[in-house]
Amino acid sequence: MIFLTRRATFSASHYYWNPAWSEERNRQLFGRCANRNGHGHNYTLEVTVAGEVDPVTGFVVDLKWLKGVIEREVLEAWDHRNLNLDVPEFLASEGAATIPTTENLAIAAWKRLEPAVTAAGGARLSRIRVYETPEIFAEFRGQI
Amino acid sequence: MRASFGRRYMISASHRLHVDTLSVEENRTTYGKCNNPNGHGHNYVVEVLVGGGVDPETGMVIDLVALDQAVRTKVIDRFDHTNLNLDPLFHNRVPTTENLCRAAFGLLKDALPAGELEHVRVEETENNFFECYAE
Image (cartoon, rainbow over all chains, first blue to last red; front, side, top):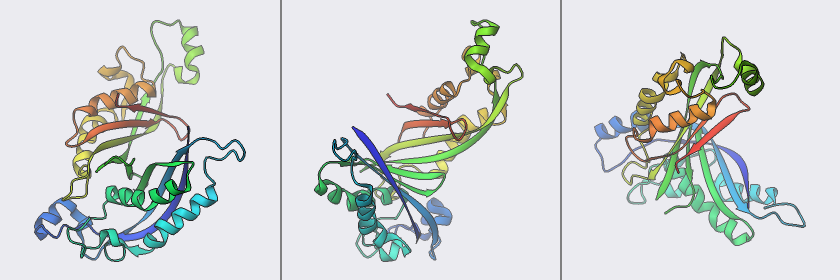
């Protein structure tokens, strides 16, 4: 089994806010991240797939293909967007708001990528890492 | 839904790799430059990965401020700007980065305010790193 990782970057804005809470509680827990006018990051997305090396091509998956999947499924929807206002999984209007924390971004990226990787056969999605800054990241390995 | 939250911290410390049970020559052969009698130092990066359920109210596995506090109290304050050889944890244990990684894992394992410690990674230089996982 070989693990293959492709990195991509996207830039987006967000803020943290739980509409069920008072302003004070939001500010207390989320601090500067609760600023309603938002702030932004240069995110790095790491997509790791696991599989066997194809005896003919020597590939686990074709990296060009993986790049295309990441661009189509994630970057087109997230890059240069406001995550709270432009991205369906984080829209406040969708009932209980899913706050665009780094943890939730990792889970959302998994949900966007997993069907395409699985449908292609060969490799399975193994891990998603989302770096919000070089020092902060979240990881999701598909455990429900 | 289970996810993991990671954070990187920096520690500047000195050490000398030397064990009393080996001869002077054996120490020099085993540890090379790292056996320099007066020690040397590094900017270590300590990466901490905490796993747990994503809180449905906060969207978080662990509050970053609370994690920072635990790591600072247990690890950073203890090792930053110190000579690792003089720390009680290294009195009978050579302060290789493997052992520093194990020490950091042990100090943090039961000190987290939420979640479970999944792994600690210590980078000694840009080219060397060591990882310790929950067993």
